[in-house]
Length: 144
Image (cartoon, rainbow, N blue to C red; front, side, top):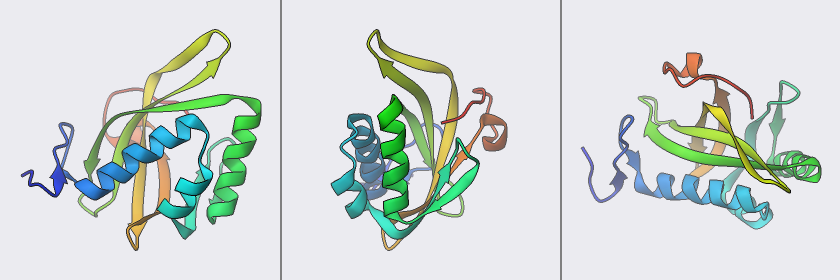
C-alpha cells in the first residue's frame, strides 16, 4: 500500500521513494554520459556490477566507470526505465529498454530487460541483468 515514503509501482510492490528517486536519477545521468560524480556518490565503494558484453563481474566504482567509459568511446548507449517494483527480499527490479544513439537518432530495442539492484548503506551495491524469462514476464530478451 503506497504511503508518502513509498512510490506506487504498477507492475509490482511499492518501491521506497528514496530508492526510486536514486534509480531514476541514475538512468537520467547514464544517458547523458556525465556519470562520474553521481556514481561516486550513489554507488557503494565495493559495488558488484555486470560486464554483460564479456560475461564477467566488475568490482568497485572505478571498474564500473572504466567499463562505461569504454562503452561511451564506441557508442552512445541509452537505457529507458519502463517500470520498477520491490522484490520480496528488498531488491528493486527495474524494467528497462535499451538503445543506442547515433547520427540518425535514437534506436530502441524491441525487447525489455530487468536490472535488479541490491543496496548497502543506502547505496547501489549490486546489479544483475535478467532477461525476461528469468524475470518471470513475457517482454522478450536481449542484452545491455
